[in-house]
Length: 506
Image (cartoon, rainbow, N blue to C red; front, top):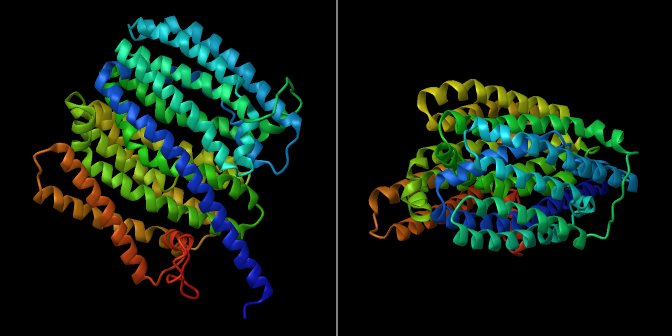
């Protein structure tokens, strides 16, 4: 019989898995619901608007993000990471957000004429005035709702995010049908922020007040998150601003939509899993054994979802664009394929940063992200000059590939994680993803239906079914080890698939 300590360890491990999977499921539902609405909205908007419309909004959003990042201390993340908080902590975080929202609005109003002159486009000035008001509304948002994540109450988190998205979806599409220009996108952003802020006070009873006493306490942790946000902005938004200036707003429209679709596996799957597991990691920050187990479970779950989805988008990109978006967007297909593959490698390592944040070591995350930024821009500048828009995708994929080994080596060292255990987390999804790609490619080569939509559905179903069957077959050959598949069957009460004694963890 196992010793009492062994039983306690196994019970703790099971609790760890349950927290990781149940939280991830709710956040997946949340993100899938929101992003599905966003995807449907994008498809309709792409039919109603032009690449140039998307480019105009992308420029203003990038400027807005640049101003906002100076106040992006992620104080909500700091509140989650801390073991205990008091009212002053919440009030101080809210006070800073409000004050910065006002400062950001003033800054956006002042730079609006300069931005319009720089890009020789007067439309940008008026859009930035609207974005200034968005900053004020965003700052007022009720900080109390951060407790939904802190307390692992993902049902309310789902409601908080879904309701405003549904309302803004209806408003944006209605405006697009009426206006038929970029203002539909801009006013949709404003509507979403207004509803989100109002709904945050309806959802949570906390009523903040002006307070400064805990700012220094929160800033000690959040200053590194600010640096991370600056790096993220340069890595993501500056490249868009360069494209908008060097190439054209239309080229930026292609890049903007390619990124949105190519990042679907990350935004739909990896991000919600990361959000759900961060509070779990924070609770295990002083328990390295359980922290390692939680990380391995998360890595396996993320890879199982994002690898097939990313490969699938790259494979069906030509049909996906022509059928859903229309012929005017076909020039973005090669860029979309490159970005989808780049995001596959990024998504399977994206959770690593949350390990460092939960352990109170955000500077490690900053150093890794800064290295990623340096590698990307070393490739981006020459490739943009030689290959134009496609060069951005090549730079993103090249930088991600170069950084994968570095990022994984860092987390192995930090967690004292056996390389063998980490490889086991990726072996099934990686192998199944490669075989799935061959099966889909075979269908594309041998079957050509006259109706493009039916061909798209055929290729998509082929990928889903083949990946599922191949994954289960590999799992069977491995002896039903613990992991993503075992957890699903356990929850379905299919007890014929127990793990072998001493079976490998994902």
